[in-house]
Length: 404
Image (tube, rainbow, N blue to C red; front, side, top):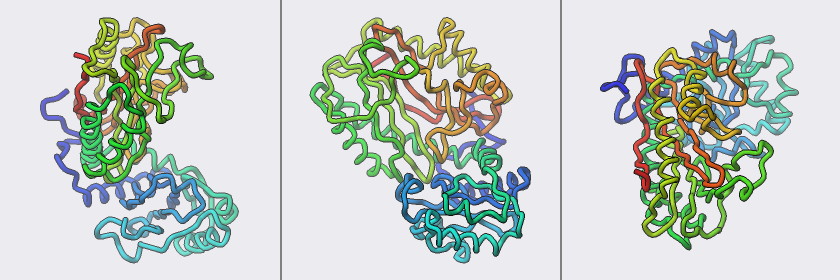
């Protein structure tokens, strides 16, 4: 970790400049449109619309329901993105009025036809349009254009964050951690998982969160796999949904949560012990020490130009040759306008995929190795790091109590 870390020559500011962030994101999207040979992007996914326009929406799952939802249209020539939204007050300050439009219902045939008419005003026949999602009604209306996945442009633009994006992620994480600091003292025998959730959700909004992104997880872990839920892969079952289950003395609880600030997600993970004054056993403390060793060895390799495969091998070697992460998860993943996005490191896509993923300044890594000893449960935690010009910088700052 550098003493004064920079990303593309700039330090991460204490507070994001939202206007600069929106302008730089729009510039990146325009560059990637050109590079991908696209004439336009048509975006229906809520987080992608937010990325392209800076618009806020009250619910991130609106894109899966038969209701009006935000839609963005960005063309090469026509300045900023057009925003179609049922929440005009969610548009950022200074958004051009002539690019702010009434809501669309793209699942409905007549509304899809209306959207096709709007596309025709901006694009000629045969234009290449990148789409992140297509409803059945839209698919039938877009026949005169070449429709391709938006990921070539969208994914490339989102992969490396600007310093203001990193400041948003850091702020989101600090809100998440502050709320968890309020919840932690209430982790006692007889408390229900839903009670912890209620306290957490109230606190994040008091602290300025825009939304909750992940239902908080307070999962008591069994000592061995056989005592836990069955899984198709035969490994550890995580996460499982919270309920009104009462926590018990000695429970090993894997905690996970994520909130949103200005469109950017956080990701918090820790292992907590239930008790009035919980103290880890020597076995549990040893698990934490192994987790910390894996983290340190892996972080020692993080810098631009290093491949994801090198990180996977370093983490595995530090754990005695056993891969230290859950079968259906990963060693690390990105975070941004989605809770989990590229880069994805250690997936079941294999070594070839990890080898072609090369770290670059502005990438974000949510490191989440897991130490599991069947018969004695295990330790899991998550921390967020930004890849800088010559190493990495932490975006998390939460202690590892009750472990040393």
